[in-house]
Length: 244
Image 1 (tube, one colour):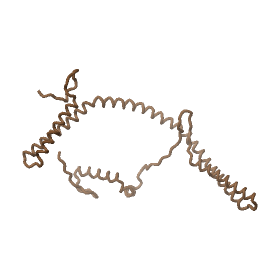
Image 2 (image 1 turned 90 degrees about the vertical axis):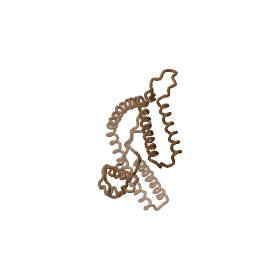
Image 3 (image 1 turned 30 degrees about the horizontal axis):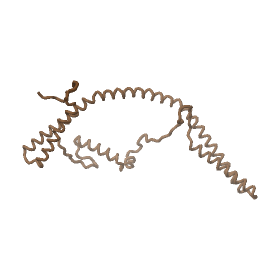
Image 4 (image 1 turned 45 degrees about the vertical axis):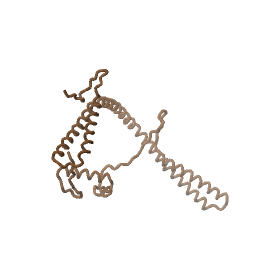
């Protein structure tokens, strides 16, 4: 009678039968030890008989790999099912919260647009006031004939600089909403993205030296080569030999 270690899953208290993994580990160690001895004894295959034994042993190793994978899947199936259930549960929670967040953002967007427009108006007003004060300071400096008038012109220039500094600060700021609980302000954020290719040849010429472009092109060409194409413009197509 042959004991199939892969089917042992109901072990009584105190038994000394190996676990599924231990059984596969024993089998793997036996195969590896045999492989070590075989490789040590046969440095080069020089006969049909040796080649046949090597082919048979290769089949044994391949079978062991498949059996290990089957055992692994069998042992991890309950765990993967539990993980799947947990992920599905949290996915449902995230979907509810995500939709809530989306709708709150939609409500906030018009108000933030309004604040942003007011900010832009303030920036323009401060820039115009700074420019007016600069012209006024320049006029005073040009017309100054006394020390008092020169000091007044310098003070006017300092005032213009202060207003310009405030205008620069406002220009760098963003429209924000501050709540009583949230530690972080809510604001608009602008990002840039390429949304379509207007000229694919120009785009390719720009990115042609990028490693990811080369990798993608090799993947596309290799797929065509596996499909039977032997001549692909711009590519060197060669056979790749492996032992199955």
